[in-house]
Image 1 (spheres, rainbow, N blue to C red):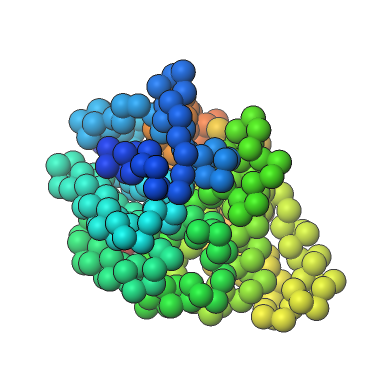
Image 2 (cartoon, rainbow, N blue to C red):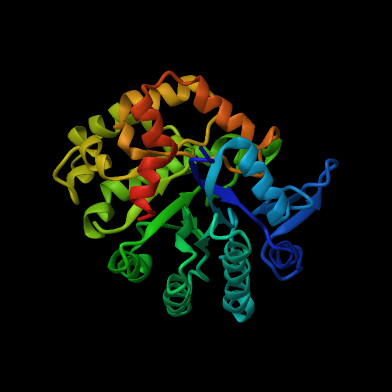
Length: 330
C-alpha cells in the first residue's frame, strides 16, 4: 500500500518571494539567522523564519514518501504579500502562484496549491482568484488572520469573501503578526506564541460578527488545532450568554457555529490533540505538518499522529478521509 496521508498545511517560498521581502520598499524587514534561515519581520515582530535553501520538488517528494504522505497542499505563509506596494503586488502574486501551480505538474499532481491573493486590493484579488481557481492544481486559498491590519470580518473584505463563498472555496487561515506588536517583538514571541492567539482571536471575530453565517459556503480550515480555541470554547459560549454585543449577529452559541469549520493538526503535543478531539468532532480535523519549518521535518508530525490514541476509522478519517472530502479528491 502506498502513501495515504493528505497534508493540508505545508509551505514553499519561491526565491522571488524572499527577494521581495528583502526589498527596501517591501514594508517588511529581514535578517539572516545563524542557521541560515531568512527571518522576516512585520512591524518589528517576527512573521517568518524561512529555511534556506528550500527543498526542491524531488526532495519534498522523497520526504513525503518516507513519511507516508500522498498529497501535500503548498502555500506561502505569513506575512504573505499584503504589505507589498500596490504597484508590483499583483504581478508578483501571479508569478508566485504560477510557481506553486507548476510544482504540481512536475510532481504528477501530488503537490497542490493554496493560492495567495494580492489583497487588500479587491479588484486585483478577485481577478487572481478567478484566474487561479481555473487551474486544476489549485486546491483553495491561503489567507492570514489579518490582511494589512484588517481582521477578516472587516466589512471592507466582504466582497472577496463573497467571491470565495460563491466558489465554495477551501480557505486555510494562517496566523500572522498582531496588528499591535508591542510585547511580542522580543524573544520571537509573535511567531512562537502570539500566532496561536491571533488564530483564536480571528475565529472569535468571525463567530461573533456572523461572518460564518453570512458566507456559509466557504470551507474554513484553521491552523494549529485552531490556536487555543479548543481550550477556551467554554469562554466563547459564556460570553455569548453574558454580553448582548456577542449576540447581535448570531443566535446560536459559538460551540454550535464552530461545528461547521475544520482545523488542521499542526502540533507536536499529543495532549493538545486530545483536548481538540475531545472538544470538536473528529470529522473536523485534517492532517498537517507545517513542512519545512519544524526541525525534524515531516516525521515529527507523523510520529505525533501515531502517538495519539485513535481508533482505526478515526485515524483514517483524520489522516486522509476528511481532507479528501473537503478537497473533493478521488
